[in-house]
Image: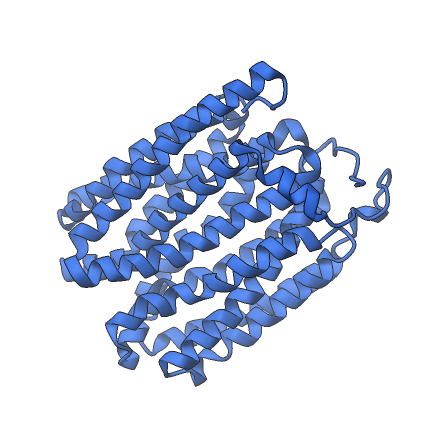
Length: 403
């Protein structure tokens, strides 16, 4: 299985273009901060709202494992173009979707486009990351992913106050998506770069099974699922709780949290390559246990800002470190596949979190919902502790890379 020669610098032209495309796609997902309120405006039964919100993650659970095996440097750009096109069509279709069935269908179509885009993007991305700068690279990528979550929620809360204004925001998001199609066309195939061999061949069944037998890879995947299940539950349900408690602009919680996350990654991403990534994950998840359990206290305005900062600090450390950790525990031919599988787990969290969160909220209310998130983080911390033993065993046997 051929691969490109390791790049010497991180900020190549195509690395920047890929991040710009990722940024625009992330804007289109951050707009759904108000989706739960819009569903209530449409009169959608509360029991269905969690499933509708989560439905866009379903295609990724099916498509990304398959695409991770099928995609290569030769065909990835075509799949990126198709993915962006599907997302544009979906964003323009929400105005015609007013029933549960129609909304689920549009969400699934949008999720399929996003899955194709991200799977293909990650296959190309790993070609431009120097091995010694994985922490820095994924700090940048995760910052790009989260910057819209700092900007969009307060804009939505401030300028799109009426529930029906949600459709107007979706229409505005189409223009940058169209521009991102042009960026896809500007990408070069890694196979025609100087020093690059022929296209990387798709991974076969035997190689896939060999990769999944690595316990370190499996544990990192589970931690990703639990992390994003907690994160998305908070993202989609915190606004309802804060409005209920009289907080005027609940979007500020995510502005503060996300700006903290960005600050951690801008100023601390180089440290991710110097500090043990497993222990960073363990400490970050342990901190999130405390933050989630304290979320019911955001009704006290002074504590609202403090908790937003510390929650963002936990997210800001763990999210990029997990991607860098997956990059390091994977053997080079499987890095693109395993990072795609990590994204599958992220999308799985976008389904599991809102779906189970909606059920917990419906049965027991907001407080229990946040304690549910805390329990997910506690379980993640336990897996991180277990991962430290597997990484140490791999180092001693000479079979693993140091994390």
